[in-house]
Length: 428
Image 1: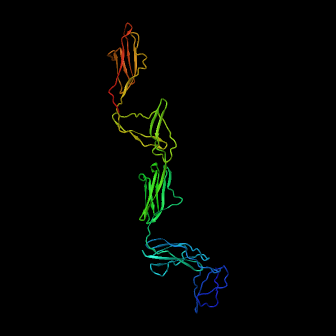
Image 2 (image 1 turned 180 degrees about the horizontal axis):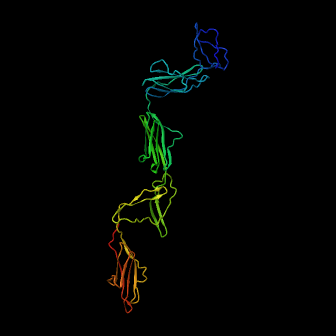
Image 3 (image 1 turned 180 degrees about the vertical axis):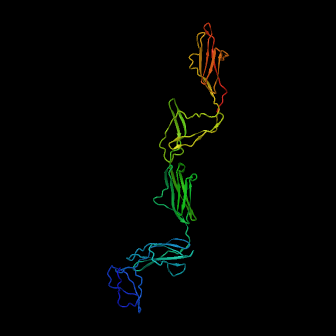
């Protein structure tokens, strides 16, 4: 822009003037000043740029004008661009309205609206209004398009709706110990309330729900196999309700196989059968591992006789310890009963021979709990420790030594018997 040129030398007395000798396709701006006897007044505002070209036409009317929403004091309008802009750029739109049965249209916007939507505010609650929209280009205002029917300024009720995009997932898979966030974006009037629930059981203690206007999230930290399942969020307002269900799978080690039994036992083999685990850990069972052990017992020593004890057993793997399995009832420590026994296998002959005047010793291994009582007899006569007879009893052996054996015509006359007695049995 340079210094404005004065295009008239003769006074212009009318409020209109045709400007000649313009360069084609050149854009021009204009302003007007009034003159009186005192001189030239201040210029008007500068006009919109205009291109000196062949005459163009006004735009046609927008194709559609509709009411998209309303409240107690506002109505939202939307419309489409004109199919024909008159060969010139659309500068904006003019919006007008008429209330109830009135006939005079009133302009709503002072400045042209550049967008194809507008919210009309300051309306009377419950009143009906009609609206019309016209496009404006450099040539001027185009044709009007009215709303098809009157619109009322009232709060609109719409049922809950869920906005789903490419990132929305209904099935989530997470490893044990990980975290997951289930969430949705929703809308409705009034704003719906969101409530979360688990299909089987209650939400875990590590679950946290976050609700804001239009969003709801369920976060679960440190997931375990107990968190596996279906989660449903219920959206509800005065217009209706909607439910969305999520599936959560927590990948964990499987539970223990069930009902392990012996199907067939032979001299060198055992056939086992079992049922699959109640919980597969969220993944298909690939195979099973069978382990054997010679025994499953442990001797707990240094307990006080007469005291009661509770015991528990835990299994351990790389992931840690299992839950303990406790004894069904307290255990009272007593002397257990073990049937007494004498092992005579170490005695080569039941008949012991020796020369007259010599000595002999008999050793008999014994076992039992409580400790067996051992009695040695000669025929039916009970033997005791004397100068010739020496009897010794330890925890695992009893022995008798006889000195200066007597005989009659070479025949052994001293026949020794061992009799083992046990106290009355007692049990744990």
